[in-house]
Amino acid sequence: MIVAALTCLALGWWQWSRFQSTAGTGQNLGYALQWPLFAGFCVYAYRKFVRLESGEPEDEASARPRLAAPTELPPGLLPTRPAARAADERPTSEYNTYLAELSEQDARDAPRSSR
Image (tube, one colour):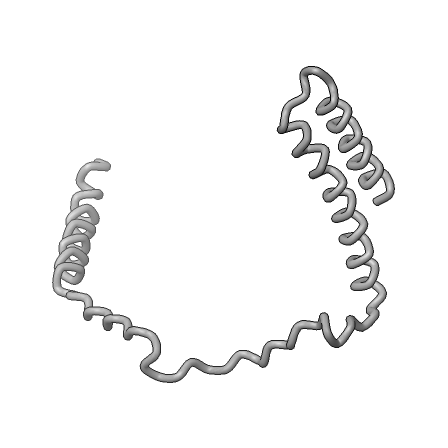
């Protein structure tokens, strides 16, 4: 965290010196003001994670209200799904019958071809 914050501050100083040079632009000024904010965020995030890991309770004013346990949806809230159509078994049974006939025909023809 210290390295990250110092790096952000160093980059802010570098952008400030670029802004003050003859080639400096408003963009350099923007970055010079932005990098210290990044350093502050590094410190804030580090402190927040340390507090979360240590299990310290948060202030009552800053604590968010806990959400209630999920409940079941009331009926009629969501649209109903269409029912699945019953499959037509006729083409499948006809095809299976055809395959069975072919298998029987192969079984009858097999001994003749092996002679």
